[in-house]
Image 1 (cartoon, rainbow, N blue to C red):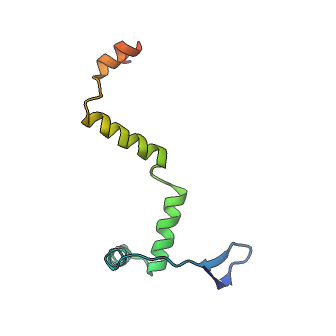
Image 2 (cartoon, rainbow, N blue to C red; image 1 turned 180 degrees about the horizontal axis):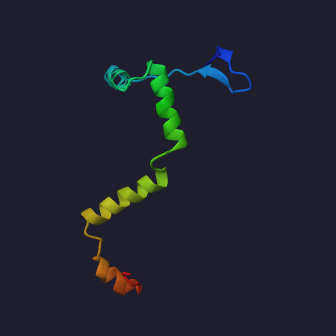
Image 3 (cartoon, rainbow, N blue to C red; image 1 turned 90 degrees about the horizontal axis):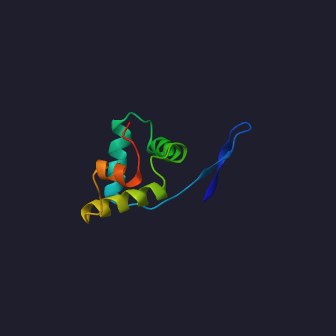
Length: 93
């Protein structure tokens, strides 16, 4: 990681981050940022990373729970809602 020469007044210092990706994925990134009207690849990547950090869709525990639910469905370890209400003594209201 190398430091850029610019820094905002009172803001965090801007740094340069490098990462590796396949050419195919880079082409998909380029198609996406250009198609969505971003000014540059860097602007799009900053936007995507900021969005992922500030408003994550799922956290790891939620993804694990979803995978387990899919396995339960696949393996027949489920029950009808009425059966669950009877078993756990809940009302459907």
